[in-house]
Length: 368
Length: 262
Image (cartoon, rainbow over all chains, first blue to last red; front, top):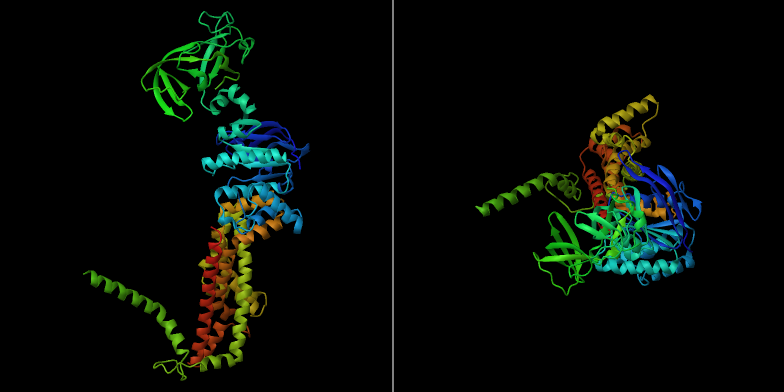
């Protein structure tokens, strides 16, 4: 069965002492891989539980495939869930677990066993149907949970931090598997995680949740390269955030080869933006308007290219394999810079930090 | 010095075990007595008192009655204990702590008080003494025990299993039948078997409330009144043996079930 679209209108979930969701509206297209990303306490698990029908929202509604399911109990919803702890039935075999949803739907006998077999094949456990759950590894249990949720061909699959309990290597492999299975079935996947790398490698659309509200929403590329908020910029990996004001004479250009873009005064000096991109100069407002910009560490250099932010001292060097992660300092200001592994930086050395004006991002919602 | 300590420790152990087990051992040993008085010297072994026991229609009838009262009361105590434990453990309604305390109160009340209370109520209602009342009394004393055992077996992650079953389309009857009961099976069996042994052994309530038909402990007591006889020892040995078998069974099934699920 193909996936269904999911629409969420103004979801609010209020508890006695706090608000878990404070008005969340979403439209997720059918057949896409959606990741809800946020730190703990952001309301992402609450949102998923409301989609699955385990928690009733205080107000707002949920539609799946155009049908309002807000009041529908989990058993009757067009969704199934892969639970964080897998919640496999310990007294049933692998096949018994996978076939459970078929039995509740009155599918028995040869049709049941055939569908169980193909679900197990889909997740790469074709021969393990007769095994007891206790005989499986963590990764295998994860796959059984996935097969059990998918065998009933739900239009929407909910995944609650499904890879959290796996080690890094297994997690990578399972990410690829999830992606492949989602493509193969065309089911709408809604996957909750706090891991931004996992989100970026899986999602068609990432929804960043913060304190019960949508902070930003878009493709992984857009969220990474042009985040709309400071929170998203910082959550999607290392980011250097600078507060400043728009300088008069924007567009006049400078004599230092920085191009004709607008200029912003920051605590680190003037920063030039490339012309028209990615935050159009017109949107910056008149001179004196406060503005926040972000520069990713990979768009800073210590090898002399681009306009300079000035001289910094290398305070920390971390080796990440593909690159070094440097923390550089001038006074109370620090920046994170990625440099190539061929260049071996030393702590305490002085470097001129340059930047790529085309990659300076203006953050729209600069508050907080 | 160390040697002396060991000797003392072992002697202490032997004395304690003698103290605990001597009555049971002497009861069992003299049930195999060849002569009629269950006192030293031991003249057996002989099975004549067991033969006499199983030839005694009153003893046999009491044995059967005890089994039936035990099974029925243990079954109902387990069902009631399960319902209370599941309701309070899973849904935590308002006042759950108070309810739990109320359910547990019979454990702190002496059997004499429970039996006497039931007798008074039965008299008020003009009900005669009967096995039904004995069964009721045993349900009262065993429900708190079954409740406590089953509640102790309930885990937070079981709630997730139930959630997963509902998510896959199971209605409440199927959730209970396919998930809750099988997952709690070790606890349910333990509760049933322990309730059975307590009912099987119980004397005071059975004595106060039984009418014409009596349970085995009451029958043994009345035969003791008519005179000391090794047949009573044989009956005691049978009671003890069945209790022991049931307890070992409870332990073994619990172990086997647990082993399969970790």
